[in-house]
Image (cartoon, rainbow, N blue to C red):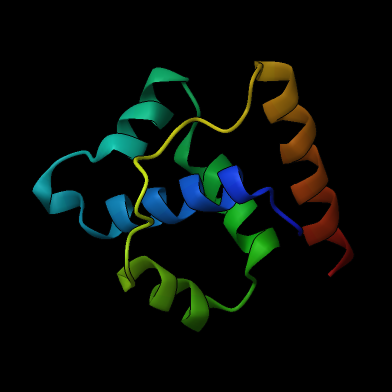
Length: 93
């Protein structure tokens, strides 16, 4: 799945936050909670974007983007539309 630069940056932040959960919720995790999105939905974006679990782990342990995370979807409907695209792509694989 081709992500926008903002989606990619946010998801990288979120993956790093999830990997380092013992340090408490990071900024991307707090945004996820604020927008009432289940973690599994973001994981589905990640699986559609980068299906290789080894590469996912490398990204989650890699460097954090320099800019702080921002929620990349302007409306709940935009999030739902993009999430639907991710699900459709995963179902074709």
